[in-house]
Image 1 (spheres, rainbow over the protein chains, first blue to last red):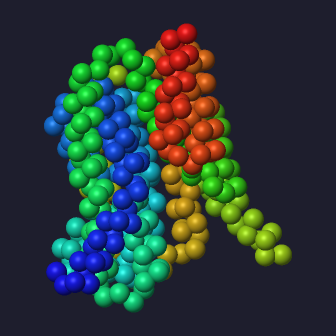
Image 2 (image 1 turned 120 degrees about the vertical axis):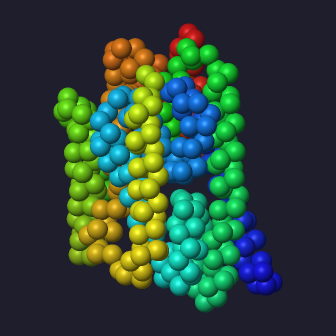
Length: 236
Length: 107
């Protein structure tokens, strides 16, 4: 590694280090909750290492416990990850010239934190070499990925030791609400969330958890429509 | 409820591959192509459109109480949301919700 790429790598590590305080407890909680759902340590680790996307892991776990049909579990938890299409789009102009294997590896590590750190960096310093940008990207997952896996393992081991009747059934809803709250940063986001809640409750009698998918579609449309209306109003 | 092993071995590999393909999409295959504005707008709301709807029934009709609305759980959910909105701290919100839940359950 040349000096400039080493520097970029270290800048990446530094840029995503504040996320450490979010990632560790989140992964720990996943380990505990997944163990409570009857998964052994190996399965919990396989889950976290292969999927590597917290919110969708919690969503899949919740729906699998409710014994929803496989297709509904997959559609819902994959939909939670659809936002990452935007991450992929945003990274392509900066990292798209890297070799295929490298791009595949970076895609695996394209999580909320590496995306957030890299977008800021590439906007601030657009003229870096490809090698520097790649180094920064990998730097930004270096504090995150090992911690995600390690904390999941710790959580799974702790989960085995926790007795069953500690109201852990409610850990998942609380975690989801906590993730959602900071997302409500604009009026369209609030509208989308409210539509999602109301529609999901009204449609909860629909078979096979399909009500949630329909509610999600309505909420997404409501958020996007609200954004258009507000933009038009601001432009006037 | 426990997760059925057959369910696990179907869902997790498919979710892993699907999630990878989502991440790989533009970076790996589609390259430097702009996304239609309407699609980009809709994608912004995916997470916030799904997660609240996913938890709402679990908050109002918790499985642990056989679907009966339960004051400690409802209060914990409200506290989590309010603290999360006020502080923008995910961990702070989880802690506040957890403390509320266990305090009320213990009382």
